[in-house]
Length: 197
Length: 197
Ligand SMILES: [Mn+2]
Ligand SMILES: [Mn+2]
Image (cartoon, rainbow over the protein chains, first blue to last red):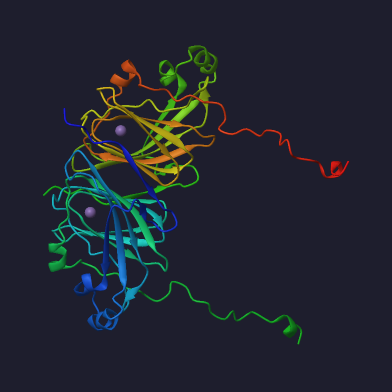
């Protein structure tokens, strides 16, 4: 019998979201996905700095149905115009393969769609375990102001298909809106030394 | 086309290690695995109280290769004689299916073996991502004094085979040893009021 695959472990670093050993590291800058953002003037203005949008630390295991692929993603906070930093997004090459996202830090939105145009989204915060079922393309978006980090696990044979999303785009974009609350003057407030005047 | 599986999320509770919603909850007491511990007198003495050894919160998804099974395990601290509380342990029914354990709380040992008698172990602490490769039976042991909690993900079609471990047992048992350090008198220490006497 050929020697079988041996057990091993990887350390997740809670502060940074990185893995140790780092495995296969993928870094995506704005120039790697500039056509995916809505505001092309904002893209042009940022391309000089070419900000780092996200990093993926991939533990390397064989790409077949025996194994489980796993990685952490660090999605940095920021916007291109009013559109939040996001991942490229993809279908799986074997399209009926699911994926689990476990949020460990920060907050974000997981947006998903099918080839039939069905759309879904899930909010993520630390402790959220999101299930991307078979057939759903998936993209994550950092809607907060700190790094958004999640752990992912998916079948060893799933693979990645980025091409269709590059061509079609996602059904929806995630844009900043007005603040959800505002601090307004309280009309009944009186400063202490004004009381009784 | 039949309606496809819809996205959903589950909340991991960082304090307890439980899931919300809880999914399918499995609770194992000493009476569910009394023959697995070495010290049968200690087992008998504890069976009246019948302590809760561990709980598994399982998110329910279909059991086929499209999906990823996922769960959290809460393994309580304690001993049966000098043997630490542990899970039953199992091979996967489809034996060449891997599994990932992500430790979130406490500390423990993951012990593994193959049908050929090869043995391996990995220490786990918060942040440890342990990889159980295809063909390895796996059991976790709480070697600390607080609850040991980990998140697990494995292929949807893996299944569980507890029978062989019930018959054979594991190659090694995890027993408490003498403390790793001891506080001994420092021979050069002098109380302040003894100095110069
Ligand atoms: Mn994926
Ligand atoms: Mn298992």
